[in-house]
Image 1 (cartoon, rainbow, N blue to C red):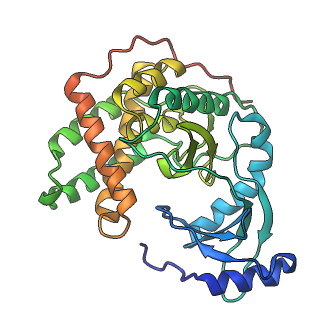
Image 2 (image 1 turned 120 degrees about the vertical axis):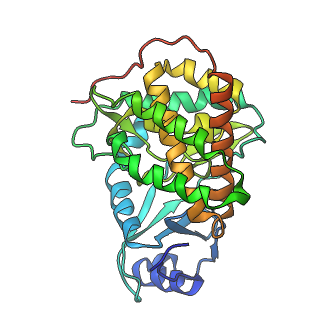
Length: 312
């Protein structure tokens, strides 16, 4: 998917595990199919998973998870990954890697949710719990900075989509949505804790209910709009309204959240359209949902200001 991506395979994983964790040598190793773009996942036996970065930036995510997951886990209403082993560069593989406890469940699929309203409430409870965290020393969230930093790459990506007519995207309408987000202004209050990457591939459900949230490589503090992504990348309009009401999202934060979600989608679509079908499919879904919401004038939710507990 990426230039300079490091090759990985079953044999490499077996050698890494045997060298670093001899007690697990000989366990079955099997690539787990995933739409993820930063890490490869390999089942190790029945109860564990090996997580290896595909490129250098992913190694920083591994370090973030090792540091913060043990502290965040007791404060959250859903299960999160548990790091069982910290791997180091070896066997020609250049970066740190981890062994996590396997978390059962399935990724939810937009358009095929068993109970969208219940899932919306579960997601809102998770986001609210993240925002209530007061752990000191938090990193800046990967996506939590100023919206203005996304302006140039977002407009460039919309320009790329203009050159791909087969995608059938209304690029003028996308530009209008993005400009609405920019006009909403920046978050000027205290930053809050964020997961930072609430994509369907980072959520696990069972019976339609949220059971686990994975991949905390982007976690940190920043603009609360960054954790509104599921409103457009997963939830249908009715459940989106429930999600928004449960969090009490004000108009400007909602506009920034919509813009940030759209930015991620329009950047992802031209980049992944021929290399990662899951990412491209979800990007198209976001674009459709965002434009549909714009056509209908939003969901008409009357909200109070977004609540959060100040970060020390």
